[in-house]
Length: 346
Ligand SMILES: [Fe+2]
Ligand SMILES: [Fe+2]
Image 1 (spheres, rainbow, N blue to C red):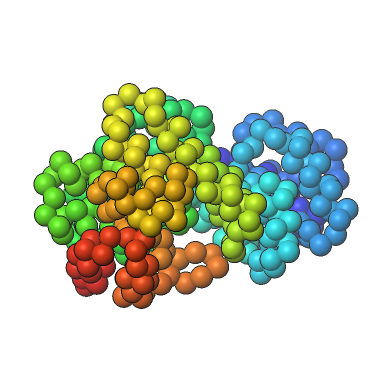
Image 2 (cartoon, protein in one colour; image 1 turned 120 degrees about the vertical axis):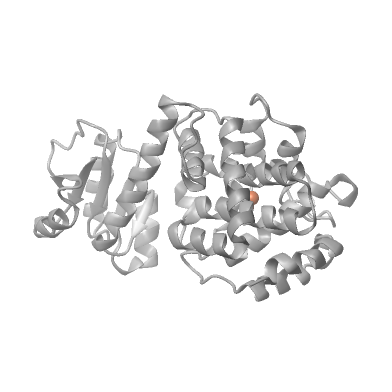
């Protein structure tokens, strides 16, 4: 994989080369150099002092010339918030705080690209592990290809098997160790939902139905800009409004997919609805909210709380469960009670 290293400081190049080569082919681009055209697709790694406006303009120009690269990794030393915001404004898809973190991020990008490649060659291969199957689905969407229901079923079945075999806690630990962001979230929600379904005695067909709805519930986030999805802090009102569109976007992405069922579409569109009518996007109330959606919403909130986010540590499981209990009339009390066995099991 080609890595275009864009910098205003040529003395940084040897260290970056030493770290990334020979695994990656590092091509230096010194800011202000006119011939910045990228001849092939690759990842852009930007390590520039963004406190200087003249540098910011140069980066903007360089990125315009190299628009064929979709992944833009910015190094913002110590993640200074105003500089992180500047990086996202310039189109960063990932922000890291030290060049040393680049190898890890590049490996993740490469994994996703490989999964996309496999997906293009064999549309329903789905990969050979739950997370590979997931990566393949997300990258297909990001690259403008439609989702395949068989991939979702395949990914879900593997997670259900894992939860049955090793228990939910092992699955949660594994996911949190190796993944992050939306991808981690979907793996967690599916595991939690599967654990929940198994706990309350669902048969395998029902566990699979709930699991697939969980797998796909946030698929609309594949169309939300990464600058919002991965923002290392709280969203401002405008960003939040964009983020809140993900259930409808997901619904639109899936509604014409062959093999899609009304209950999956219901789960995707309505997992942020609350029984008291205070949710979104349709402001449904209890009689309009199905059992599957009620289970999914509880699993979703719990999984979101126990995730690590760039700006906060994961909430311990017992605290996360207490937060569910404190949500009162938004969630179904009897289900929240049953969920204690899932949430607090060690
Ligand atoms: Fe969501
Ligand atoms: Fe979610």
